[in-house]
Length: 125
Image 1 (cartoon, rainbow, N blue to C red):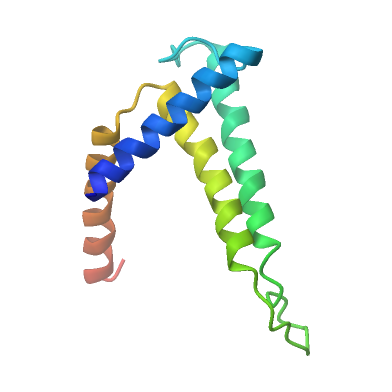
Image 2 (cartoon, rainbow, N blue to C red):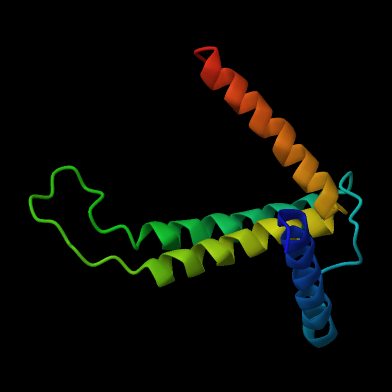
């Protein structure tokens, strides 16, 4: 499976979940959202903040992050760390679905930004 196929499948799985969730509890309004409306911006903001919360949960898996700590904790739960990142990504992916971004648009934007950051690196940014 190619990278774009994997990304397309991820978008598809997220949409499938969002539709199923809406059938049970009508969490999300009809998408794509009109982002010029205040209430839709609030929905997106709340979704992004949930993703940020999940990233904080991922950070909790990093036990040796305090520079003043003398002892090291050798255990690292990679599965839990990855799971929290997946949770965060799902919220961020939801925001893309809600505004109508396609996997192709996201991938092209990702590649453009990748070129920008490589250029910055090469030019001493």
